[in-house]
Amino acid sequence: MKENIKKAVFVAKKMFAQLVYDFQYLEEMPFTFPELQTFLQGITIGGHKISDQEKLKQQQIAWQKLIEIIEQGKFKLSKKITCKLEYIVAKDEALTPGIIRDGAVSATGGDFTCHPPEPHELPALFDQALKDASQKEVPCFYYTVSFSAGMRESSFKKW
Image (cartoon, rainbow, N blue to C red; front, side):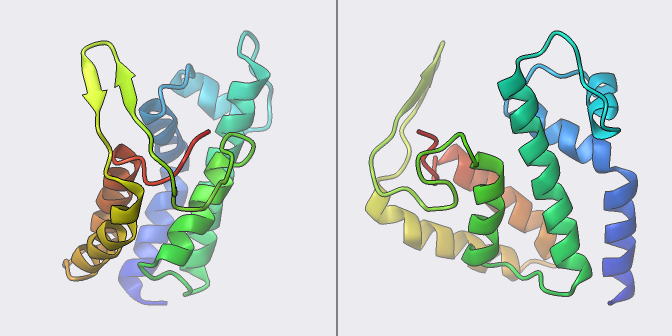
């Protein structure tokens, strides 16, 4: 394993709670950082829906899987790995977890309206995002940015 990859894995493990917290925060989940730390220690958190705790568990598992893939030297910017991680996160939440959507979606909320790309545009957009990310000096960072952009574009169907 290259030295910079070892360092990245070390940092990811040290900051694991923060990584999971940031991800669940982006998903607008109701956990505070101390609650999340408690949950990661295997202790239940009172006052939260079981479904929220199950989603949090899937996010924890996805981060663990990503770190495992990197440690095994099997990580590369690919649709396969992205779909594998999305499958873990969306398990029990999406109709077809880990599959790029093939139908139309829209997202609204308050003053915000999102018009995601048409389903037939997604494979090319996805491939371009991976290509762009792989050409950067820090591909994992750009992979994360690309993955986030894919979520914004509703690349995966959540229902």
